[in-house]
Length: 598
Image (cartoon, rainbow, N blue to C red; front, side, top):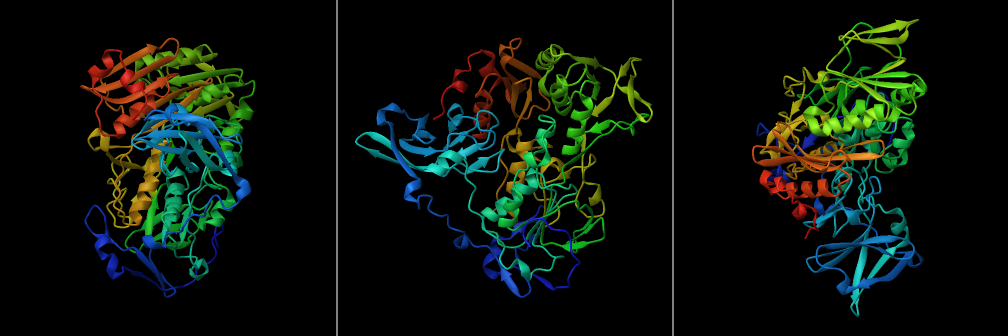
């Protein structure tokens, strides 16, 4: 029954929740102090994960023909804290020396292929210079996100003062490694209306949660459900690569879900949750019982409230079809984008060479002003203007006018009328939590789900992750924040899974995001909410700079363009628990940040 399937009729089966005696000391506690049971008994078979049951990985060198061994350097060629990309003839590896020991692993980040030799080496891991993913140098395992796979690990030996690497040719070529995972034991024993783990939402938080459970040896049933018709996909690409087909941006293949018995219910919307009876109800009336629940439903784009909002050719970019249709309709036509958000600006950047005209309407006077500050926002605005994008700032849309039922003009409150064949709305999003109103799960005034550091809600056994939550951000003194970033959703999904298994793991990561426009990338780490000053080093006019966002005397966030790996370095300093003071960056000497890690 693994993989994707449609919902069959429920079959009656008695379910008993059991907590074995030896596990009672490891009960997972919810915020209200009540314990949630861990074991699950269905059809008379009780199963619970133990560490000694964890699957053992296969020897990657079982085929002698697949092995290559090469001398890559002299022992004195690499200093402590240094990395080097080395060629083994049939592929490259990353050689690392830290604390007198040598390590070797894949040299490209599995996420987007960034060269890790240009990243940051610190505290036994390498951080990607582009998007901040972290890999353990001893195991190759991914420890912070984005991305799903780790790196292949290679053997290193020292012989006659030469460093040798022994590696699998296949691993050298693939540059990625999927961690060993468990499968569901006797899945056929289950009623279709009963699952141990139910994950509502199939974004990165839900997917990483499911994968982490399998990686940790969890062998009971896992069901993911999504209102969309697709398997989990990279939604961040919808505004960056708008003509991508859904299949091109799948995070995992259909075969992957079948192989590891992760069931995905597509086009399946949850309309209510009964946490007392541990039951959810779907839109078609189907009911499913669960033992542990993850809520990872993401957010819903906000729409305009003015006249004409329901016209054809007015879009929020939510699905691959939305993005594809906008690209098709925008060709040599007039496009108006409402909102200079990350989504809005990415769409503008993507369409400016395809459309006849691109206009951006924004309530603020400068794009990204609240997030990146005036100077950075103005520099970005100038880049867009030089690429034929027109801005209409400090105004709103008052009406969308039509001709024969289709978009024709956008009327602004300033009185300006813009020609528009296509209109894209990018004015923010709201958490998708309305189905929880009668559930007992606490929802705050803005619709977010407050969770603790273990991603637990106020209800035992119910977890939440991704765009729907507020959580304590450790490096901001546990300030409750909502961080709707791709990387953060991955990490929260992992933390939720670990705590479903009562591992008592708290989230402690640094928010990291990026955006791309006209072949240039902005990287950002930290949480700049409430910043009171921006200190810029480099040349902002030439788009080669680093901006430090400070509050009182502390650096709380950093952004850069063409200044790698500064953002990853700052993220690593923040992750280590060290503070970066305002005076440290005011001098202009940031060599202590740009140097090699140790």
